Image (cartoon, rainbow, N blue to C red; front, side, top):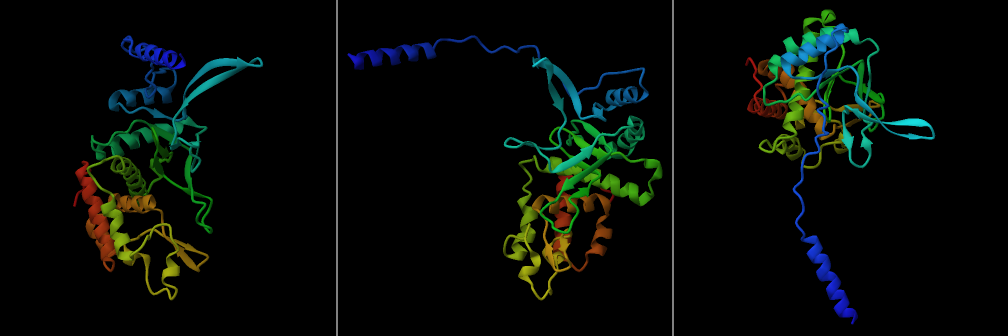
Length: 304
C-alpha cells in the first residue's frame, strides 16, 4: 500500500512540476544607476552633466550613487546603498586591498574633467569601455606581503569592479614629465582592465617568458634564495619590478603587478627609449614588445 501511495505522490509532483508557467516578464522597476542628472545650480554637477552628455561617461566625486530606505529597526531607518567599488569578492564582499578617500572639495574635479576629455580619452580606443570614473583625493594599495614597504603604496589610477578610480591632481602644476607619467598610468590601467577580460589574447604568453627563463615559479618568491651569491638580477629573467627587503633579499612581484609595471612602461616610453634603458636584458625587451603588440591589437595607437 505504501509503495502505491508513494508512486501516486511522485506522479502528482511530476505533473505539478510540468505545469506550464507564465513567461517571465520584466518588472519595470530597474533603474539605470551609472548615469548623471543635471543640477544647473551647481557648477561642478552641471559640468559633470555636460561632460556626460558629450562623452557618455558618468563621472563621480562620491562613491555612493543611490540610497534607499528599506525598513525601520527599533525606530531607526535602515538604508540600502548602491556604491561604486574598486574590487569585489563573493566570499569577502568589498575588497579592502585598495584604499581611497573621497574629496572634500568637489571643485577640484573641474580641471580633471578637462584632463580626461582632452588628454586621456582621445588615446583610449572604442574597444576599451570606461563604465564610469571616480575621482578620489588619494588612492593606494595594500602590499602587506612586503615587509619593508609601507602598508599603503600610492597609486594614480586603478581599474575597479564597475569604475576607474583616478587620483585628483591639478594639471596646471604638472611638469611635462609628470603629466606624461600620470597619463601613462591611467592608460595602462584602462588597457589592463581590457586585456584581462579578453579570451583571444593569452596573457600566459607574457608570464611564461619569465617563468621559462627562471625554470620555476618566479612570481611572489624570494629571488635571492635562488642565487645566494647575488650574481643574478631579476631583469635577466624579464622583471622590471621587484622589492628589495632590508637590503638582504629580493621579493619578486605578483603576476598582475608584473603586468601593470610593463603596461605603465608601454605607455610611458617609446620603443627606442625603452630599448636603450634595458638593452642588456633581452627578456625585458621581449615582454615589452609583446605587451605593446597586445595593446595595439585592442586598438591603442603609438607614434613609433
